[in-house]
Amino acid sequence: MKKREVLQALAAWSAGACSLLASGRLEGKSREGAVPALLLAKNAPHDLGRLRLSDYLVSEKLDGVRAYWNGQAMISRQGLALNVPPDFARRLPARPLDGELWLGRGQFDATAAALRRSTAEAGEWARMRYMLFELPEAAGSFEQRAALLRDLTQDLAWEALQAVPQTRGSDATGLQGQLARVLQDGGEGLMLHLAAAPYLSGRNEVLLKLKPQDDDEAVVLAHLPGTGRLQGLMGALRVRNSQGQEFSLGTGFSDAERRRPPALGSVVTYRYRGLSAKGLPRFASFVRVQPL
Image (cartoon, rainbow, N blue to C red; front, side, top):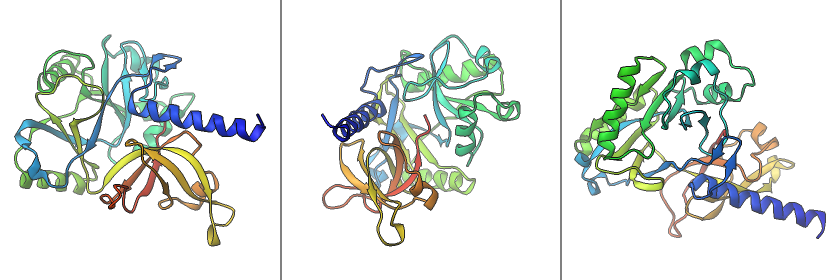
């Protein structure tokens, strides 16, 4: 096999593996163990009247880095060890937890940068919060697990460990008002979790995200060359989303990102406005690379 064919085969394998990792279906290994089987959200329907909103608990959608605590180490969604200071880790309970490491609204890039550092910066971690929204593999309904999380964080009384506040859903008008307030305060959106749901993993409609624009994730399959002003740069990414659909993602990139595009096999987040007649995302625009 020629070198070019070998590289193409490796890229294809990497893209497929990352797709499975993102969906939680691959029993891969990291230096800390198996990829965690986490619950992933679907987009809420545009017609909220289709939902009985009183069946859901509603919380703010945080713009942090997903982090799974296995009782001994902090693991990313893709199964990689996160660089958490020992003093922070020692204060966490010896039981699995699921949440996001969060520096505050609009601080996603700063949070990701803190986790990439080989040496933790005390100032960053003094502000870091581990915001919990799930007790992995615990029995009972989500409503019961949310109550256990509240009790856990109250008992530990540590400011860095907090349960994400959950409120019972009301009606579509009330929910849109709640969304508007969160957005006005600089938040991203809302999460709706079916109160009666048992602990589940994978992408499931028991967990919905409500944002001004829909979003999804996709694996990078190829870099397509630019033309005209973009001659010599990346013009678009060929990607495969969580529904297995392939399409080109060509907007939302800075020139710096086009000079150094996301690696083949990496997972990117994109926004879009509804679906085309063929079921593909309309006006899809790049947002960011998933950091870990």
